[in-house]
Image (cartoon, rainbow, N blue to C red; front, side):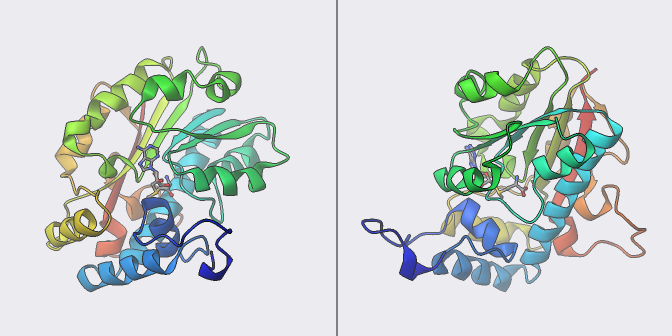
Length: 267
Ligand SMILES: C[S@@+](CC[C@H](N)C(=O)[O-])C[C@H]1O[C@@H](n2cnc3c(N)ncnc32)[C@H](O)[C@@H]1O
C-alpha cells in the first residue's frame, strides 16, 4: 500500500494493525509506514522479529501440507488467516487435492478485499470477515455453512492468532467451541508466541503498548489448548523444529522459536 494511493475519503492509518504489521514483517507490500515503523521498533527488542514471522509462515505451509497430504484433510477453517502471502492455505491444500475446501476468517476487512482478488476463480475457497471470538457468527455464517460439511473432518487453524487474545477473552474456551463443532478425525493446528527467551517480557510490553495485543504464553499454557487431543509428532515445538524440510543442525534462534507449533487430532 502506498500512502499516496489511499482511496479518496479514507485516511492513512495512524496506528499499526495486526494484519498489516505481520505483512510488513514478512516483507509484503500491503502495509503502511506506521506498520513498518512498528516492526522497526520491535527489532530494537528482538532483532530477528522478521525471522519469527517468516519461520511461522513456513511452518503454516508445512502444517497445511501435512494435514492435506498425510492426514487426508480436505476442509480447512483458517481462523485469523491474515493478508494473502506468497503461499496460502488454499494453494498448499489444493496442490494436494484441487477440490479441498478452505474458508479464511479474519476480522480485518482488507483481508477480504485482497483475498477476493486472489480467489476470484476458486469456487472451493472463500473469505469471511468475522471475529473469531464470536464462534456462533463464524460457524453459522452462510459462507462457512455453504463450503464446510461438518459431518466430515475439518482442520481448524489458529496460526499466530491466539496470542492476540487476552486470557479474559477465554482463548481455551474458544478452541473447545470450534473443536466441538467438528467431528472425530478433525485436527487442530496452533502456533503461538512462546515465553521461551529472556526478551519475551519486553517484547510483550512493546506489543501491548503499540499494537494493543500480544501475549507470550508458556509452553505449558499453550499445551493446554490441546487437552483431550492426540498430538501429532513431533509434538509442541518451536516452529523451526516442526517437521523441518531438512535437519536443523543447531539450536533454533530466538526468531525461530518465538512461536511454537503443534498439530493434534480429535479422537
Ligand atoms: C499474525 S496474523 C497471522 C496470519 C496467518 N494465520 C499466519 O500465521 O501467517 C493474525 C491475523 O489475525 C487477524 N485477527 C486478529 N484478531 C482477530 C479476531 N478476533 N478475529 C479474526 N481475526 C483476527 C488479524 O487481522 C491478522 O490478519
